Length: 346
Image (cartoon, rainbow, N blue to C red; front, side, top):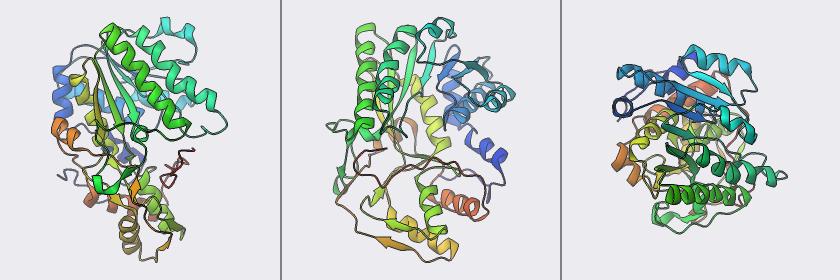
């Protein structure tokens, strides 16, 4: 169901407003939830808009709640922006064990910390970030409910004919990044089971907005005349605001052992068709290389749709927004998804 009416998103300020605009379901979740909310790793791609949505949804629900974003905040302007939105910014290096005594108490925690890009050559840091921190966080917040952001990379490649990996499928992570992410899940699961900590694991498959994301990557490749490689012929994508809203809703579904749910769009996108669609919008030819493989890194979103409802923003809204933003040369983050990578090296 398409709910946002904007035909074009003018600038970053308008974009961040759209990305943090709470759904009715997110407002209802914040109304039903007791206590403050801490977001660990709030300085990443999704963290700021998720924190802002949580604050906006709480305010709309009439609930007085502190929303606290925890990050190193190497860019002071981000902490200032969060504060301007009513989110408390707490500076902390989560790898510094001594800093945990100063973390604020809260019955609700969203864990977004992790490392993906730059993994190759920094494997030990990757494992420390993705598999060591979960133990520290579980000890510090042993009486809280915790939503854990994970990744669909833990599944490995799945036959396209299967329609995407299910939460119950065997896991087959490829590469050290994916393996360390499975380590993250296993460490959190251990503490969930032994300490009775209710948790939700969100296996996110490519959140997308206008500055980054798999659909934006393809749009930019088409616009600049780059060759579109087709071996990874299918991809998942979900509008970031929908992923934010689902993560807030998942706080109410936290359980022990943890709830596991794929967070992505209702169906995988064909890379070829996405590129052709952007080519038609831009009026540019599209060059392809190779052919689609029979498998891809894709997940099935049926369980998320049943629990949280279908995403409110789909292709009919995302494609024009992305194309317009790219054509106008608006801000882009140098954070490509590397969706073409089939070997798991990032």
